[in-house]
Length: 395
Image (cartoon, rainbow, N blue to C red; front, side, top):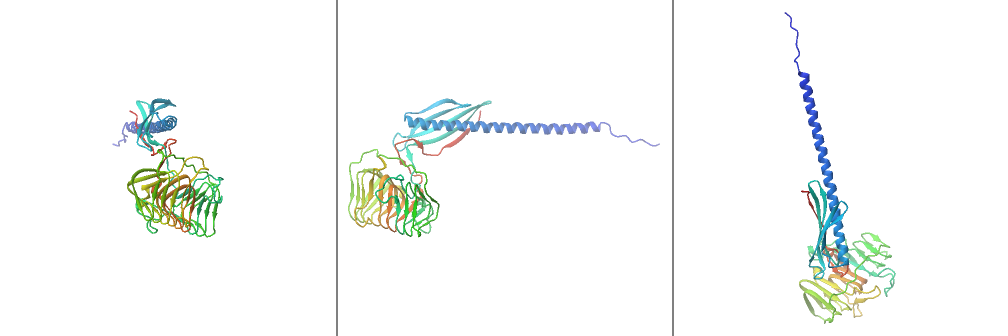
């Protein structure tokens, strides 16, 4: 007897149910992913909003402190879709009460809580001018008393390069770099055989002998660089006079002088940490004078840096042979000081002055460790330390 084959009943239904289950699972997965992506996008948006609110609070703190040093902060100031809170507490700064530790918190409400971002900065009345090996600050067009085109003048066979005193003393083989940048708000003159391992930036023109070389960029008609006026917090009343063949040591601290005079073959040393010297009058140097030692970050001299641009004092030499072989380890800031150094002068650090004239065979070794060294301006509050960001998730 022949049998007729019979197909299993219900197979199509089972297959359809399995396909539907797979499609349902895929749809659920796509919905979950979409929801997660939306949440991530929302979190990023509110985080950015909270950051901008905190940044607004930080900038308001700077403005308020420049208006009134008594500003101590504010709470829940509404702005846009959220608010910010600022606290400003006193920390040690350029003066006993000038520094402010500012914390600005931006808050944006979200479902189930709030998103917050905090920014923190230390504000102080400071400036960081020592990013140059040498810079002449006199504005372009102001008569300097020398030829107009010599606001910064490097005479024959002079050089400029860089080093980092945190790695040791200057060494032409192992600790020498090409960031010996020099500049002026006016003109720069480079005489025969001068060699600049770095960039040259002039507010007016660069007058360069055909034998002079510049390894970096050359910029003329550059925007004027701004340097703050500085007035000593204590009025100097005494002079510092050091005779020939004498070593004079200053322990760590701050000193105020009306004039400084060092005789031939004399030396200024420091001990115990950073020495800051304010001098309001002339600095007269003989031959073979040495100021400081490596690292130059231990010695900072701030000469006349107040008053109008036409007001000046001099950092110069009393002898006919131009105070030859002057060696300086440190930072010099003299916005209204005309600097005139003799032959074979060696600068291991940074020199900011109204005008700068270097003698033959002089050398500027820009100390990169001085880029973060500040001067107290007694002026506007600025950000002293970089801000940090802390995201507090919604709760």
